[in-house]
Length: 100
Image 1 (cartoon, rainbow, N blue to C red):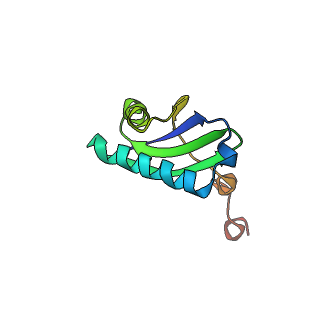
Image 2 (tube, rainbow, N blue to C red):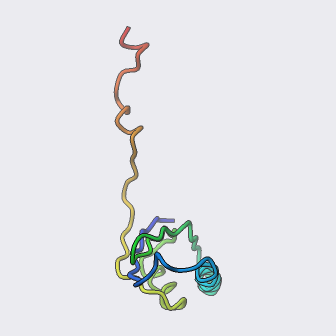
């Protein structure tokens, strides 16, 4: 499966209550179950007026179909093509033992 980042514009997202988030999660889970395809909702981050979701599936159209079934916006769907972090800076660098 491929990994996708979905940006959802949701005015007032950062003011949603825990109960609001529970209901959104339930709706999303029902939408995932209804797809009948390999699909994994990994997590969602709330920041300002946006939700940033990480989902895994084979095709971007499946992400859009999940959004349609759940009644969610999917303003931007981008496939993740690489992942890196601070530890990446050490790749290819000789270790302290090798340098000695």
